[in-house]
Image (cartoon, rainbow, N blue to C red; front, top):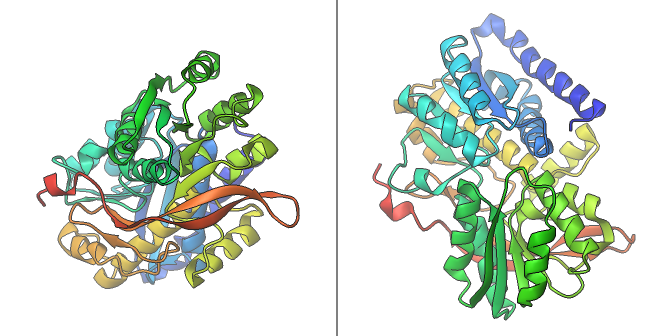
Length: 393
């Protein structure tokens, strides 16, 4: 459920987004960007962070991205594929928007992005990046700034392999991103799968799955449950006493700053793999974390970082095209990825999905006694995805 505070934050962000247009009117109409994202329900904070990271970049530019005035229209898909599709149709038909972003979940992207691409509009994904759009169904008007869905789980599979685990129990929700998760993990983990379970997207009780894990006696558990799903799973896993006996190796959506705060001390020692962490030492990341905390009074999650990088990437393209979003001009400009990513190295592969490094993090207590995600080392370097070879653009 959205709290009163987050509802107010959403209202404030929407007002700020609309205000971006006002100073630009004398210079001509701003570029409209339609953001469809999940602002309510168990995954609401994911979309809020994507939105807030994106709007921070625009605010830092004085209402501009790449020096080009922008107007960001934000709407909540309510974690409903049909609602996401309706918002996209309204953006394209009523608002004449040609550049869209924001979707968190792959099932909502699947219901929405086909119409966007069929209308020769541009879509830049700050999160959802299913395997079909990276491979045979890749599209010249679709970019992922986050990852290809399998890649983050491949990094967890490699970490489990590096840690010497021989038997892993694996779980994910039963939708496209969940299927990509288990496929990705198994691609680089070479040991035995002690159990493989698909949970429900609306699941709140994991007692049956925890009993299966206990009975299987694996060396470790890999689980992908983003947002509120992850908080619920981790709490119940800890309450069942499993965190102390069966370690977890998880991708970043299963353990972010919000999940960590909700689970508390029981999460200490959990291994996480990610393309970014708030302790990164590069200048772009340090500046972003400081600015985000100053504005929103909270530590940014990976989703906020992806929202910020998405805005920066769009801004770099708009700077080169001088504000044109004609696909013929925008595509080559976007593919240069000419921006200072908070991740450090960043490039697009041949399918317009990221080629980037992946890191192993660990939940540890700092000198102040508080838990934090601490970067321990690199797991994969210049890592693309398994589907790029199938893409013919």
